[in-house]
Image (cartoon, rainbow, N blue to C red):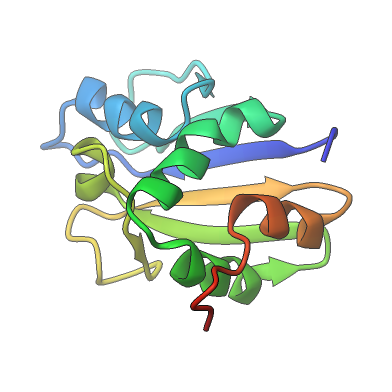
Length: 136
């Protein structure tokens, strides 16, 4: 997991405050660094983070909200080769919580797309969302 790379992509609607969109991302990914973008409203906000430090807030939220088993299922479903892709509800993230969603139609303002790339994604899933005692 030493080479873990996190890429976060979030559409910013013309009616949304860019600072609030950034805050939604930072509420889940504390070390995210946003790529500079031209001022065009149509461009998505893109942020990057590296290593486990980039997932610390998400790690803690999954435990606090007791959704590790659900998260595990979403992560496994999004696993393709060395990549894991999943989506988070932007409004819920702004409120400081985690809610997984589908890429379209489930999050009214559009989701936060998260792409994790690492050498051993199964090990990453075990760390981030291990099976709980009650399990699925």
